[in-house]
Image (cartoon, rainbow, N blue to C red; front, side):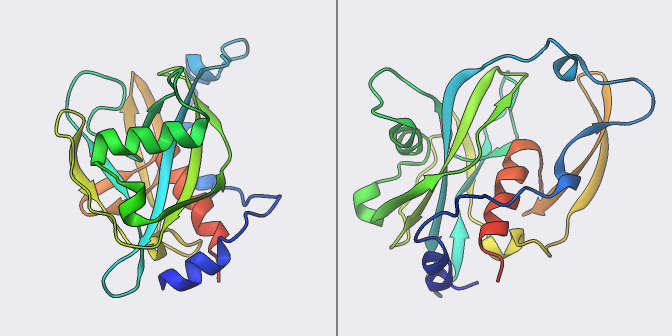
Length: 212
């Protein structure tokens, strides 16, 4: 999908955002019942956080999106594929500022060099295991960004074409045990990595916005 098409479709976000593909939502396999974080009364408001969903043109004029493989270390999301992002800090003017600051820290994004424009905010969600209320900040860059991974946080930068996440894109069905719970969920396969959970749902929503 060409970047000029993407930029044209994302001039203004619609009031009603498309829903992510239902198959991407993890469900418990068998009769174990809902995991603790989905049981009534387990809801938490979450600490404010933001991730940057940055789309940009590659050298051929095709639209790509910036993802990261998290560095392997102790933590809830170690080794997973995610967007650059993190918790809001008191000095951040707003959640867009949080996302841009975190992207600068994690992948050395220079918004001026890449001519980044924030389009708007996507659907916020809570990640129970880490207790963050995450807001995806959608942005487009007019130029290909010069990115460098901060290796204490990012194992590598992944830049797949956004066409990989359009509504008709293939989704793999995965069954695995996480935290002692047998789960089934849909995932995108990207460069030998499985993209699932919140990251996959955000990408699916972006794909819905870009539906031809």
